[in-house]
Image 1 (cartoon, one colour):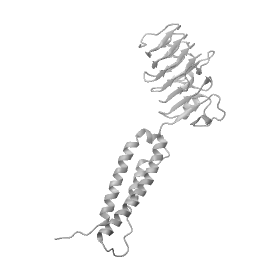
Image 2 (image 1 turned 180 degrees about the vertical axis):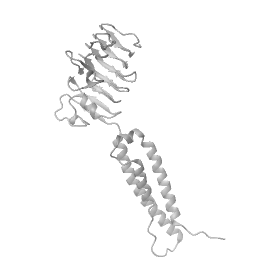
Image 3 (image 1 turned 90 degrees about the vertical axis):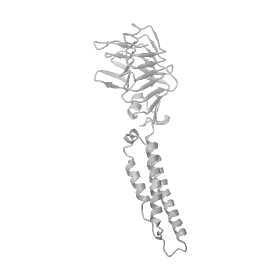
Amino acid sequence: MIKRRNNPNHTRTFAARLLTRLFATWTDLLINTRALARCKDALSTGQLFQQFAGRCRKPLKRLIGPSPSPHRAKALVLMRTCCGASGTFGLAAVLLLAFVGSTLAATHYVDVNSTNATPPYTNWSTAATNIQDAVDAAVADDEVVVTNGIYSTGGREMNNLTFNRVAVDKPLSVRSVNGPQFTIIEGHGALDSRCVYLTNSARLSGFALTNGRAQAPGGGVFCESQTAVVSNCTLTGNQLIGLYGSGGGGAYGGTLNNCLLNGNSSSGAAYCTLNNCTLSGNSHAVIELAFC
């Protein structure tokens, strides 16, 4: 009968493989491609895994001197292996948590009366003074939170045609703290200046959009598609001018929920999906193909 020799390396390898498999499973659950794209300066998942696996497979120092019991020696090897591996796992876990924490959606703050505007505007004490600055500092899926005030500065031109007081050119959420009664986005009635532009999947909630004036559709808000959503907003006194318009002095495109459209010229809304919205006093209430 052949008697097998005790092999401490077998136990060490088994423990290392088990922990590396657990680590790989954990990272698969917590990390996605969007998170990786947001953390350009963080260690990649592959680097973390290689460091972890390398530490786990590092040869142990052999026990010095004879051991009175092979089982006791094997237990010591297993204990040392697991302790070393768990220490490495703990380090990897800390790195992983820091990595994942840095990838979570951020909130950026806006206060027209801020006296210490400091990018990326991630708390009220460093809030931006105009909404566009906070939007520019944000990335996809972030949130921009705006407190009370009249926002009539900042903005950007889109499509080489119309200036927008707020141009949301990435899929993120922009919302007010206290609703349209207290938070106003103002265009420029004397010049070509729309209130808001929303790209696909962008969201706007809780604002009054007023005094917007645009040559292209959407004096109050222009939405690239039905996936852009406007909720709990009031659109008043906006107008469409020039030769490029096809309706929508208040709103053009997008999905509007619980909004009031009043006193807009060249129709209150065009090519929109309207859910529980109220239209009154517009030059034309709704242009054709607005879905109610």
